[in-house]
Image (tube, rainbow, N blue to C red; front, top):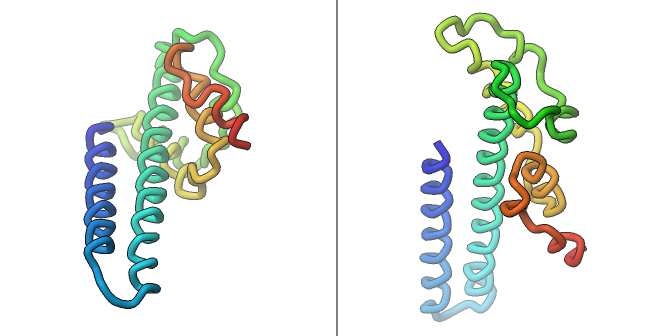
Length: 146
């Protein structure tokens, strides 16, 4: 699934780069040229947000499934994951008899439907609790930026 998220991200970035190339080659109205140069930035931010949201859904789902099935080796759940408010209707949905743990994925998706990753400080909070120390995201970088 992560490959799909990455493919979508790469496709979005390619389209943004194509628009930027068009803007650089374009002659005429300066405001339109400026808009054409700014729109790929918006596209890139949106693409990164979508990618990180999809990645978080994957991570949250994997952690919850491992915990529910007794395969979680990390002891307690990371504090952010333990505090995550999940929609009870999705979690308790028993209609999925062939894939009973699918409800956890749907609950994780519901969480991201009302959220985003546009706030840079959320990224380490959402991911670092489950990542090994050598793979933690943006350690110290966000603090310096903020």
